[in-house]
Image 1: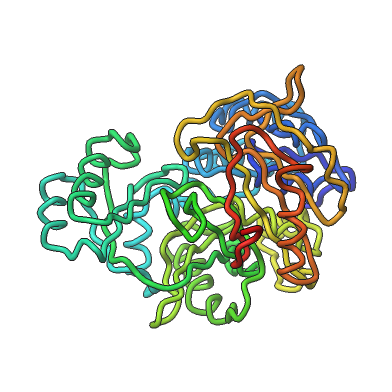
Image 2: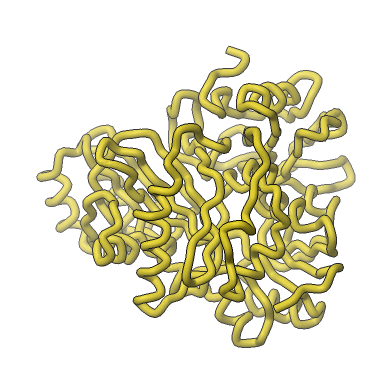
Length: 425
């Protein structure tokens, strides 16, 4: 599969991840985003088709004769967008719905890892509330995690602080009150200890080529306090990581296991790991680019992205295709007041025109453009992403353009410890 020099690329989604992918892919082609945001409108054309409208997106790809479609969010992958595009002969990057079960069903993923000897927490699956409650009452509550089986926008994980909270999490999930159908099956796992790590890898159905190790910050508050979110920031690379061992024991066995089970994995595989005293273990898989890990990783990726994606689709991926520049990158997420709960929309964002440093990229997520300017439209609003020769330099750059005299909006909240050290405290 060859791609014309001036390629036409559709990026499905509307977040900071999609803006970052477009920034990396758009250097030699024409970009379309569905539905996109205020930032993607500056580098391509936004088309108001929701990411879950698979029929509408496939018709668009056919009409525009697109050279490539790249899927950002998990929902359309689980719904079978890749299967539909492939059936229509439309080029698309991402795993099939069957392969995406690594993310769309935590219960299935736990069984898969058990079958293939991939290190992960001990796991128990429940569909019945009373059975789960009896189990919780016997299990040391301080050592458990309660997870919704299906997709829950990165928020379907509860680390209970007491037996009462553990029981409440079980009841809320299995009743459907918390996460709808995503929680009708739950997975209870032992709670592991150790630093977390995000390792993404390009996969072509046969092999996995890892990107730089990254670390994201799920909790809303500094010091990992407060509820889980979709991600409040990330940085890369993480020092002193044996990526070759992770590739040997986790990434490559995952790709080989999927091929053996009849679900060749082509796309980006995201392994969310915990570095335990017994070695790295998989907390969860994602079947797509992470958000916000993608933002700093795209700033560090030296190689052109499009040839890598095509090699994954063609089954011709080679390690030397994936090269990075030295240095580090940090992404600080600016979120609206109330996030991860309900947020006010339409709040004016100020100071975007003050960011002129070429080492800083302002990747939009929950933004819209109206007659007042760029305004907020969702919980995670912007990802201030900076490159530096060192992690300290990247941190200074990112935080230096946030707040008074820089980018700001009413009710803005953000963590001040992205990158592993507090800034401005």
